Length: 137
Figure 1: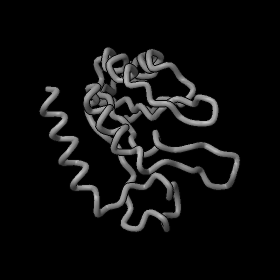
Figure 2: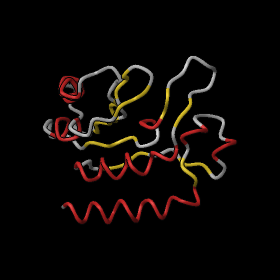
Figure 3: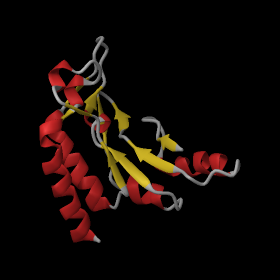
């Protein structure tokens, strides 16, 4: 079960969500950090990763949704160029996995076009993230 942290929720509160799922006998749980709403944008507080890891469950960082800029228009904006910075920071902070929406033609993606990671660039960023993971572990 993948539990995505609400963008309004303190990371420490994820313990309660995990306990609720665990109480049903399902301990196959992932917790996903994807930023916190802060005024006009989302902010990724990397201290949330060790906080959420203290629950004992693996923590995944959603690098693409964390780069979104919510708006009042029909389409959510975003900063694709910030995805590598966010992902590298999350891996260095100790996340157990990275979630990314990937598309072969991001500008023409039907959803979240501004934060889709280009498929042609996936191998390079994954190799970099693995290197960071190996360096900090």
